[in-house]
Amino acid sequence: MRGIEENKESKFLNGSSIHQLLFKSLLWIVISLLVLAGLLFGFAGKLDWERGWIFTLTFFVCIIINLAILFITNPEVIEERSRFHRDAKKWDMILMSVGSVFILGTLVVAGLDEKNKWSELSGVGWLYLGVFLFIIGNLVILWAMALNKWFSKLVRIQSERGHKVVTRGPYRYVRHPGYLGWAGMWIAIPLILGSLWSFVPAVLSVILIVVRTSLEDKTLHSELPGYMEYASKVKYRLIPKVW
Image (cartoon, rainbow, N blue to C red; front, top):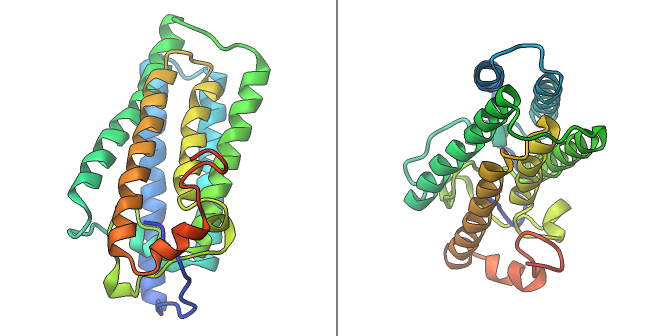
């Protein structure tokens, strides 16, 4: 969830809470890497896949850096995103589930493509472009999360946490910078892995991001105080000068 005006008072997390949160976060990273590597190399049917390892390493480095920076700058957002909230919008739970299938499908198709040689993006330029887009997308998300303690994984108005609108950082340019970052990362995956066919589920995931952006924006307009005024100043939802 994208907030609007920052609350400078942070919720206090004691040492025990921080340790528990760190353990949960590291466990999530391990599980994510196992799933990612299992799908990629399992469906590729081999381990000697250079692009698969480059993607896995890029993902690992980004996620470790994200965790370290957020624990320093905004541990509340990690705690918020680590929990399941029953008050999240039902439509967003559905979209999130479908989106997860598309993302996992991107890895599966890329693995199968590598195994069966259906297509190929062999030029090293595509690889460099993919890594660049993935890192830039990740940095946009990290920037937004570092400044917005209400950056939830599911759409909900966080009244219990004094949900307000955040206007600084990337929120000065678009209203949903997190979705912009994710769209860039999802498109980058087929480029890194060198698979044309994996663009199919990757593009579907980006289309889903556009749908989520539209629905979330309508929700914030109607339910989050101050959002209409913010939207009148920051005109674009996802892409500056476009939409």
